[in-house]
Length: 388
Figure 1 (spheres, helix red, strand yellow):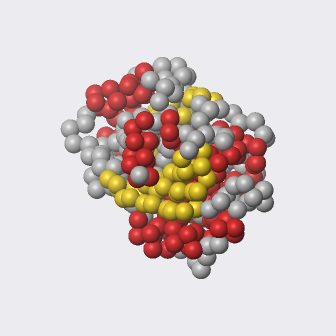
Figure 2 (figure 1 turned 60 degrees about the vertical axis):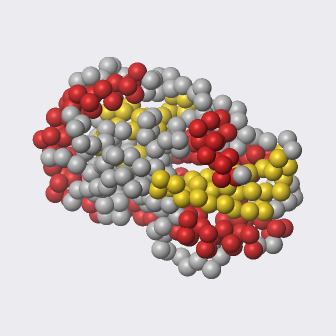
C-alpha cells in the first residue's frame, strides 16, 4: 500500500466581491489529488483536497517541498499499525520533515490542502464517511450527522444597495438558514449601521444576523463599532482587529457584552493557544473559527481541539471558517458547534453534496465514503479532471 502520485492544479475562484480588507477578483486556490495503489471497484482510491477561500493557491510549496517528501518516504513508514491503511499522522510528519518551528504563514495552507486529501483517502480506504471514522477514533463513537450551518455573504460590490443586500439575505433565509452573516468595515460606521438595520428589520423570530469586519479595525474603531453594535442583538461580532493582535481583542471584550468570534486567520495550534491565553475570549459566549484547511490540516486541528479542552473550552464553541465539506465532516464527527456556508460564492468548492437541504438552520450529512466530494457533481467533475 502506498501513495503513488500527488497532483496539484492552481485554479481561479474569481468573484467580483470584496470585504473590508480584500477583493476576490484575482483569488486562486490549489486543488490536490492524492493517488494510492489501493483498488476499490476496479479503480485506485484517490483522495482530494483544496484550500479555503481567502488564501491563494499553494502550488509552488506543494510541488517543491511537501509532495516530494511524501513520495520520497519509504511506503511502509506511512502505513498505520493495522497495515491496512495510510496513517495521516505519519504522512503529516513526513511533510513537515526539515521544517523549523514557527513561521506558520503560507506553508500551513499547503500542508492543510494535502492533509485534507490524505484524510479523504484514509476514510475511503476504510469504506466509511470521514465523520464516522473521526467519531470512532477521536469522538464518542457516534457522529452527529445533523450539523448547524450559517449563510455567509453580505459582501460589498459596485452598485449593491440596501435592497440588494436584503434580497441576498432573504434568499438565504428562504433556503432554510436561520443565521446569516454580512460584512462590515468597508463603509462608514453610519452606513454599516444602516445596512445592519435593514437586514435586522426583515428577520423573523428565531432568525439572527452576524457581522464580520475581517480584521479591519484598530482598537479605537473596534470600540466605536462595539458600542454601536451593542444596541442590536447580533449572533456575533467577528474579527474586529488584526488576527494576531490579542491585546486588541482582550481590550475590546469589556466594551461588547455580546458574542464575538475570531480565529479563522490563525494557522497553528500555538497561535490558537495564544488567542485563548491572551485574547480575552470568553468560553461562555464567544466562538472560535479555526479552519483546518488553512492551519496544517486535521492532524493539527486535533491538537488544537485538545488545547481548547485543556483551557476549559468546549468543542461546541468551534464553528470553522471556510464553508467546505472537510470542516462539515469534522463538525459531525467531533461534536463542533457547526460550520460556515457560502450558498452562492466560491463555487464549486463550497456547499454540500447534491440533494442536501438546509432545514431550520441544519443539514444532515449523507452516508458517502470519505469527505463526500463525489456527491457534489460540479465539484467532482473538476476533481476527476485532475485525477485523470
